[in-house]
Picture 1 (cartoon, helix red, strand yellow):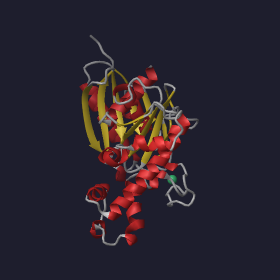
Picture 2 (tube, protein in one colour):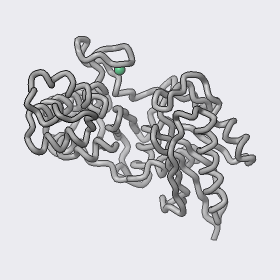
Picture 3 (cartoon, protein in one colour):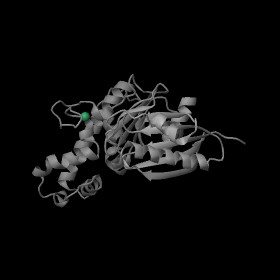
Picture 4 (tube, helix red, strand yellow):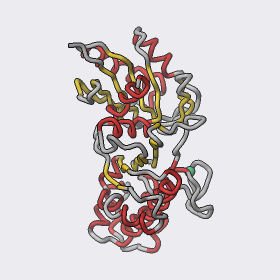
Amino acid sequence: MTEQLAIGVDVGGTKIGFALINRAGQVHAEMRAPTPVAAGAQAVIDQIAAGIQHLLDAATQPVTGIGIGFPGHIDRAAGVVRQSSNLRWRDDVPLRAEIHQRLNTDHPIWLGIDANANVLGEWYFGAAQGCQNVIFITIGTGLGGSAIVGGQLLQGANDYAMEVGHVQLDANGRQCPCGMRGCPEMYVSGIGFRAGVQEHLPTYPQSVLAGIDDISPAHILRAARAKDDLALAVIHEAQEWLLRTLVFCVSLFNPELIVIGGGLGLAAADFFIVGTEAQIVQRTLPMSRHKLRVVASQVNNSAIGAACLVWHELA
Ligand SMILES: [Zn+2]
């Protein structure tokens, strides 16, 4: 029997994930390749096209379309990437046209912001199945968000809704590279963790982190679990800023589910997920969070979410 297949591509700052899935979310084939960021946009597009071609060749059934989850600002209608700081793309890149040129096929290609692809993955095949109002928060190098509101993916007038990493929650907060102060990303992310260590180190000179040259979030989590004062200060600050961000989202959208994902979000689940529901209860009106649950993401391959951009467009 013929079944429809979709290809998903998750473009990250260090690697690109590819998956070929069917309507039920079963993975027929997958692969990963490094992102050649330093070699420039054309090299990255070559890599994306080569991965798609590999899965097109592997497909034993017709491929309905291709979804690409992308970090940055995109124009979905035009198929153009406007800007991506992760990939250091500053000018417009006509991604869809460039890939079509390389593939020599006319498979439809849909672009989506990576966090939107993630929430679709959870909605179709993960923690958010059957939910109508969902907030997805991804904590990694940066902080991102997306939402399903009333059974619809929230996109915004400029394809830029749910930019929770840069909601200015404290005009006197830490300086963010975006130009504003007090953005949650400067606290709840790998970038934020490092900024926190730098800021608080003078207060805790005895910290084990003081002797480490290139501090990673893994170092900070390990130190926090060993009760290091500096690491705990950074984590507690991150917890507070995550909570402020979530309370803001809960009050605005009245979700039934918050899904927390991203590499750091899952690695720090004991700090960022466990107990968060009870904390939200203390800072929101009962009507806003009456049905609310806070859970970890379940779809462990973001390329599956990217493939859901296809199923979402065809729904
Ligand atoms: Zn910012």
